[in-house]
Amino acid sequence: MKKYYLQGKEISEKQAKAIEAKNQKYISSNDFTLWAKCQFVTVVTK
Image 1 (spheres, rainbow, N blue to C red):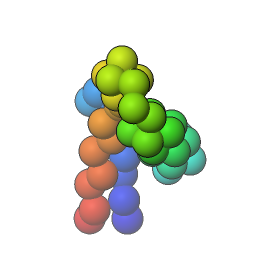
Image 2: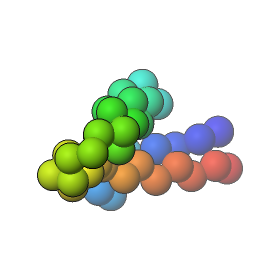
Image 3: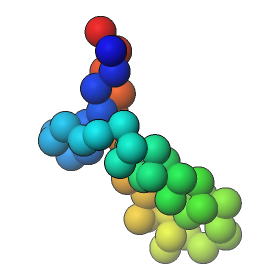
Image 4: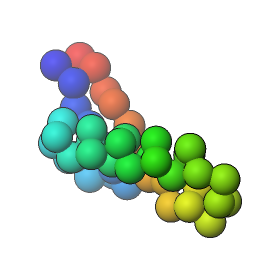
């Protein structure tokens, strides 16, 4: 079972995947200000 956390709060898998998709868009851009908007999701597997 996986648990997803964003800034210390548990989030759903659906939310985590949406954040990862946004991060991919930001990272593929050449604009460094977008890179700063990336959010880091921590995944804990039990």
